[in-house]
Length: 358
Image 1 (cartoon, rainbow, N blue to C red):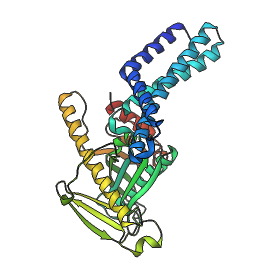
Image 2: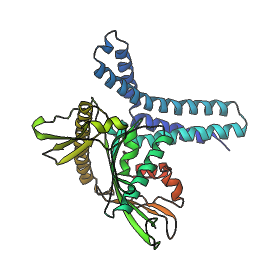
Image 3: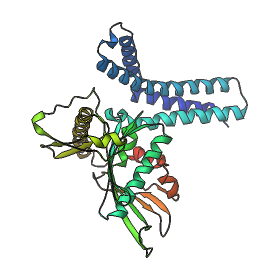
Image 4: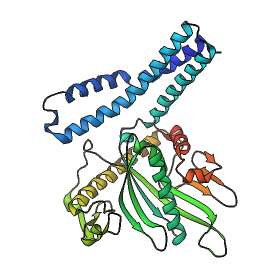
């Protein structure tokens, strides 16, 4: 039975979120940005205008989520005052709780970089064909996840392997909180299965590494000394049709101070690929800074469980039993086929609830 005590508890949770999420400040910022967009000269500087619109969009995500909570609570209060049917009260209570839980979960994505696009690099571990095939399976898993969650996905660079699989691939996911959702996928993914490439049908273990970093946009300033960069050009072997392979449009950037190497073959234009490679370098340098800041936070908060960068994070077992288990959160699924078809949101949520922004 739905009572006024339920309503009181929900109002208290909403009020806590109002203060914790600085809704008043966010509303003032949104109002100010909205006013800026209405000025006659707003589009005279297109890049600055795009940054402002992106900031406004990010603020509206929070405000709309909070307003939905308030609306649902108001509806529940009216139904209680009117002594509505219990079934109607139960439905409204469920809707209200869901909207509050969604906002509480969204708080796990409140780091500055969480709303940026994400760049994902997938590379196979040692093991030749087995690991190369596993890397392609991982790639397919994330592509299916991205499609199911309405992200725009670009292939920035791909190196096919022979006879099957991939040597490496770089993907870009664009959409709301792309990096926030994918940042917990960083690390080594381990597969145990009966090998389809072994005539003796023996069990094999394969590894693939996933590296995710936020794509720095124009609102983030990263200064790069051009003398620290060297370039190579080569013919692309990636997607894009025959025209891609006729000229040396693909580029390889090397950053001397960090040792970072970036390859990009997304476009048929060498200039466009160079510009994208610079953006990817800025993004990796930004990610390094984020990691340094997080390391300092972890020193201050010694009770918080730490995740070593590049460590094994998840097991996918197809034989002798079927199980996918996250080694950080202990979240597991007995349906690896569904997981490999992109059903990874429960793993993402369990990671964020334990290690996300609090």
